[in-house]
Length: 111
Length: 115
Image (cartoon, rainbow over all chains, first blue to last red):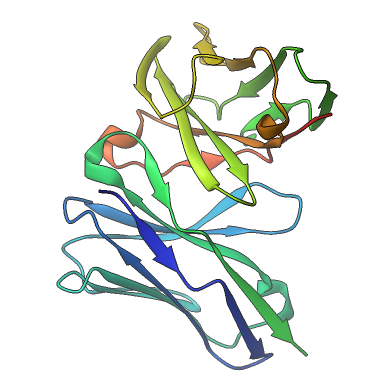
């Protein structure tokens, strides 16, 4: 079945790196996504990775994909207080036209 | 370019009533999807519309319905509201839909409270 799992909470100090982890089950997913949700807001697409890639870097964001273990991670370098939000990982389940989301990881950045 | 616009932003209804939520996609986008977000169940897919046709549907009861107009704007309707329908309803648009692995852009959502 389709399932995406994330740890629920991560706390870091400002300036440190944050690593948010995600596991998924659908090996047919061709794209995997990271979304950010701030309080009272919708979802903002941060980055995505194609399943034939191992890594993608976009400014402070690095996505690592281990397809064998079905493990995805998002690294945020030099984490700022403005990065405090809920981060969702999502897969395009079997190219069905819908996204399957994890439960979201709340990132708390302490000054 | 304007983003995805959802109206209203907040809505309070009572059990048994019905509600209609509206979504205007990004200009040029022809696919609109709807998601329900609750603290208990997280984000769940409701349905997707493309060129006025429902192309994909999630596991929700028939009380949840939607439609898409020729200008790609979409509405979703929930009839006979239940307390458990209280949620943030998010609309998302893309050029042609997730079948082509496109990026999905979300609106700010409509927060529905059922009393």
